[in-house]
Length: 276
Image (cartoon, rainbow, N blue to C red; front, side, top):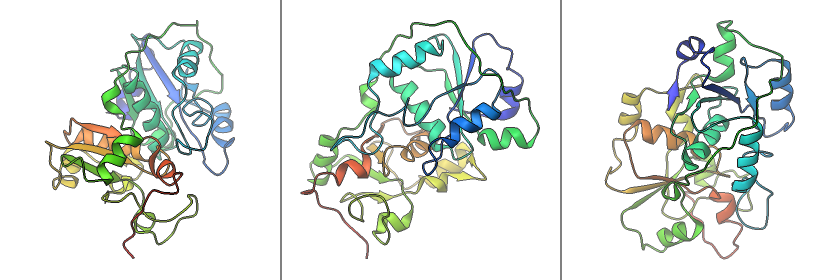
């Protein structure tokens, strides 16, 4: 799931290696692509969070709904990414944008996909090679094998809030202030989905890198491996590092509620909880 920069730099010339730049800034949505054009890992292609890894925002579905699968396939084909490729995704070191791409590739059935630990920042700090050229590749025909078990629907989360899923744990990946309902600058109402526990995704990272598998095991040692775990955040982006962290810790039944809190509160009748 995670590779170190030392591993990647030794494999830059592998013919079946593909690198994907996922840098993005939620406040300056053009910045990621600007940074990519200025400097990126050799032969990396760019995937934009909102243009390539999300679809149009509607009344429901959250602020970053999944893209139409046909649209995502077209992007993969245009980038020349094949089912046989080993793919490494990176962002600026936040972890969440590369993790979104990682999860989506797993969702469409691609096993050999990884996140670069530390992202571009860590890579650049040790002066590993970068490039300004925007590469082109021969068009491919990527075939999907959708893994529906990785996705938690709104309906399933609603069943959880109605106490109809006793073998499910709902995890809110946002920071504690937003979970508690102390502050909410984005979504309609502060708080969290009823019954959710708070495990901020940033607790699974240090200095822009994921904690070790052993550290993640310790972090999640209070959770039951026999239960289904559904992770969410504000819009289905920062939940993704928690998905990876749970997998690091050996949990097998992990799903993502991609619509997340922004989808939940788009239904005005839905209750929320606070810890105030």
